[in-house]
Image (spheres, rainbow, N blue to C red):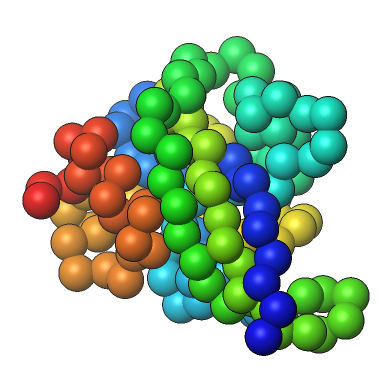
Amino acid sequence: MRTVHRKIVGAFIFSRDGKILLGHNKKGGTYQGMLVIPGGGIEEGETELEAVKREMREEVGIDISDASIRQLEDIATGESEKTLKDTNEVVLMKMNFYDFEVKLHEEAKAVSLTFDDDFGDAQWYTAAALQNAPIGPNTKLTLQKLGFLQV
């Protein structure tokens, strides 16, 4: 199996009423069946901040330009199998994650979501609703570090 290395941005998006936006990668994507944050690959010539703003528009239809955005210091790594869209080739994705904490000024119910790319089934979750949910390993660890989930 071929290995592909990618730099990925992701956003831990919190609503004003303290909920987190999580969803699933579409079929063939990484961490199948687990809740993850929206994100995607950094394009050539793009900064991490530019990439996360673009990816949030593409993945969930949210313009985060007016939100409070903070890049997290830890660069997480991970790997997962993925089926490439163009060729249906199954590859091992080795990823470096450049994650951001995004705090919206709106409550969850006021945020309109659209799903046009690789991310779907997204919902707003309280910490209590996630206690027994299948969460991607890096997502869960970061939610614990941010104090949203108990260790």
